[in-house]
Length: 360
Image (cartoon, rainbow, N blue to C red):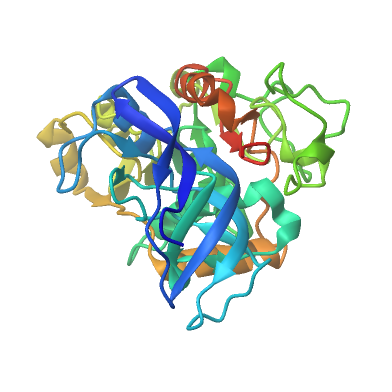
């Protein structure tokens, strides 16, 4: 396997990337070689890398290969692994490029990674399985010790929607969500007390270069794989100024916006909780007196752990948690530049998926 190469997204510097061939590490007995079918583009971490606003940390630097939301099939399995060729797996990134940094290495046609890092999934999920990392992030935030059930969630992106779905899955009352962008608020009323439906005739925000579903081998078979960001939901989505409440017990911020902490604190009841579940490039600051008067608890939710990933896999595969209706855009990996720009600049794009199936 010496000299193994792959096609990958290489971020040369902020706002400049290319699709290029890079070398791969030689797989060992405990490793898998996985052919990636689809990879998601993160509008949190990857956007900070793309804009150059990612705070410095050990290992940070360019050029880099991004991506930690990938799914594909095992091509080769080391003798010491329990996986088999053909297994459908979720790949949360890969450190397998001797000459390029992995941050976090999942945006490539082929990856090499330790078997224990690849999570076997039901192939029927198809491309929707790229959402597993965000679902695990939401699960981790909701499972902080001694946390009340959220009654207000900030941001109606994919993370905010998954937080809301997990709340409903647990039998909690529907949380309120705040969202300023009209392209991310439902078109048909605030609450739809029924399961989501995305008929084939519904408008879909896909690239003009999209191709028939059948040409992507691992695309989800159900029409709800692709939907619009304004589809109906099962909870109220409001502008902050349209919400009169000032007694929220638990607020979860999924926006990554560091500028509105005072506004959130003003809406929290005495003894309430504020959870920071986004990733914040700017300095966090707030007025002390309102937080003091409320004896407010401020919590920070870190990245997901392995147990979160397994928990959401079980919830998804058992039918308790739906990943439908969250992917809004799909483009071939050959259009990576346009795909990344769209993911980071078009508010109607909840989740962009790169399709690697037609890449050599």
